[in-house]
Image (cartoon, rainbow over all chains, first blue to last red; front, side, top):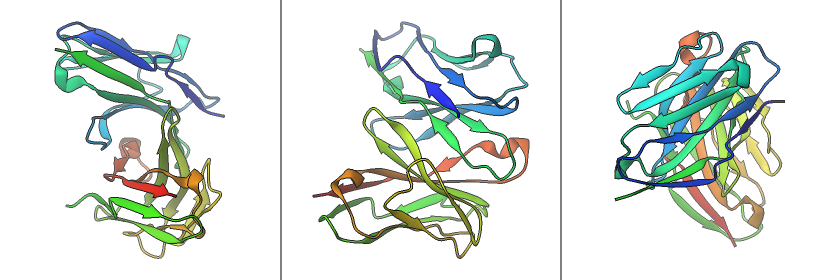
Length: 116
Length: 115
């Protein structure tokens, strides 16, 4: 069975500090997809990134970066120079890649608060 | 494109009442699914559909029914609401079949309270 663990329930940092959100996953599949979603206070889910299991390259998008390590089954998310607008709940998620299988497994989320 | 739409945004039900949460998408996505979000639990899959006429159960299907008569619509039915079904419900959709298609598009959510 798939499982996603986000051990950090809540994190608070002062604005402009860097912060890393941890995500550890479990799956028996050799092909799978990992995701990060942001849920701001308004409640909608905002897609941030998708990574497939064959691509271990780290990715950077502006102040956001992701570190994918299959050896430790981790897909961590770092925000550099945090801003108040980054305050949100962040979810890591895992999807099997079998055609016809829709199941997306979410972690329990990390609530990030950026203190101005 | 409107994307994924959900109605209503808010709903209060009494125990035992029935209702249908509506979900529609205009992106011609084959896959649609329903999740519920509870504090400390993340999002959990209720039911999903891989195309019109085909549905299957997710992680927490009890107390919910679905049907998929068209590609666009995927309603979620609560036949006899219980307080344990108080939650925020998200509908999602995505394309099928290609490596680039695994991004799910989520609706804005329906906040349901059962008293």
